[in-house]
Every structure is written in C-alpha cells, then in structure tokens.
Length: 254
Ligand SMILES: Nc1ncnc2c1ncn2[C@@H]1O[C@H](COP(=O)(O)OP(=O)(O)OP(=O)(O)O)[C@@H](O)[C@H]1O
Image (cartoon, rainbow, N blue to C red; front, side, top):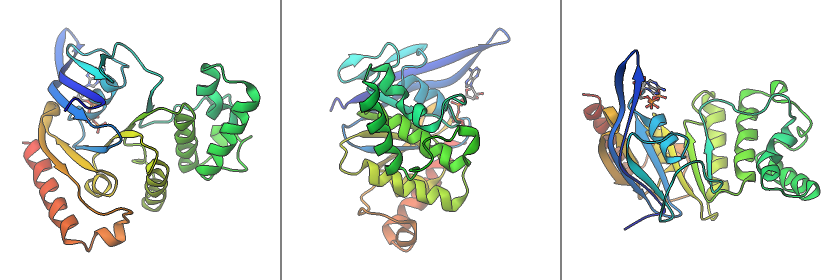
C-alpha cells in the first residue's frame, strides 16, 4: 500500500550549542486516503517535529515525505495544518482571517465572503464575523482557526493537539464538531494528541510513538461511529484498547 501521505525513514536533528539533538529517528508511516489517524505519544517524543515534516514546513535531516506520489519539498496548499497555538492574525477580524487561504488562491471578494460566512456558521461562530481574535475566548479562537484551515479546502488535515489547552467540556464539543465536519468529507486526517481517550474517540487507527518517534503500537480502532465518550467508556472494546494503548505509552517512555 502506498497511501496518500508517507513518511519514509524520517530523521530530524537540530543543532544546539554545537551539539546535535536528535528529535526523530527513522520514523516511517503510511496514511491511507480518507482515514483519520491519531498519533499518540508523551510530551517530547517528537510528535510536533514529525507533523512539521509531514506539513513540509521543515526539511528532514534524512528520509523523505511523499504526498500523492511525489516528494514533498515545502508547504502544499492541499495540506492544512492546525498547530497547538493560535496563529490567527490579530489585526484581522474573524471573517478576514478565515478568508486568508482564499485570498492566497486569488478567489474573488464576494465568493470569499460567502465561503467564510458558511464556514463560520458551521463552526458555531455566526455573529462573530467582525470580532478580532483578542475579543474571543480560547475555544472560539480554536473554532476560527479550524474554519480558516477548512477555507483552504485541503484534502489532508494535520492537527497538533488542537484542543489540548481547552477545558474538558469545550474539548468534547470541538471533538464532536470536528467529527461532524470530517465525516463524509473524504479528507485524510493526522491528529496528534497525548490523550488516550481523545485518540480513541477520533481515530480509525492509532499509532503510538515512543522516544524519538519510535512506533510502539499501530492499531485499527474498530469502534462504531458516531462515538461519544459516554458510550465508549462502557464499551469493553474501548476498555481493551485503552488498556493496550496505556501499556504501549508506558513501553515507549522506557
Ligand atoms: N527547533 C528545535 N531545536 C532544538 N531542539 C528541538 C527543536 N524542536 C524540537 N526539539 C527537541 O526535539 C524533541 C521533540 O520535540 P517535539 O516538540 O517534536 O515533541 P512533542 O512530542 O511534540 O512534545 P509536546 O507534546 O510537548 O509538544 C524535544 O526533545 C525537543 O526539545
């Protein structure tokens, strides 16, 4: 299987104080088109490094990323990236932030406005079009960032702990929203998290990373959709997967 997105023996090292720091070593992963893959790992195991490479934002020290059969040599408009922290532009209101990817594509103003309005409604931000990022709560900024990423109609979405900083209830809401937006879209998602429940709630497949991005587990998640945490927690299949993923995380950190 070739997959839509493939990491082939990726190694990334950084130079710090004349010393080479290896963040990722010979990491390989093949992602099938239309699948939702969650990547689970403890802090510092190289998840963000891996996602930056998959997004074409940084170059590997060794190995290659292949996207739709060709080597990735930089950011690709077809790949959306939602980072851990907010990257909304503070001087633009919500509407104009969401329009950004469309502006880059040269879409006409009227069409941009229509698409942004529709997306803002889908993520629950109707009525906040003219607000600036500083006037929004953390959850609303996340929603706006999600809408902006979707405005570019990327066929592949990379997400780096996008809901990590939110309170539990808000996180659940946004997870459910993301699933609603994704289902039936045909989009491919690679979603990084350190939270086992989040990984199981969202993913078709979970890949667990240990230190330096070593793959310690790679499992299909056969749980029926739609999923909610309340129903999953009493499902024996979920409990079994949770136990196995916890053991893999533990193994990965040793
Ligand atoms: N630009 C950089 N320069 C030097 N070292 C770096 C750089 N980026 C990452 N590292 C190191 O690489 C390792 C992996 O970092 P990375 O941010 O990829 O981990 P992570 O799994 O995403 O962590 P977290 O879950 O806390 O975000 C860490 O030891 C980190 O200090």
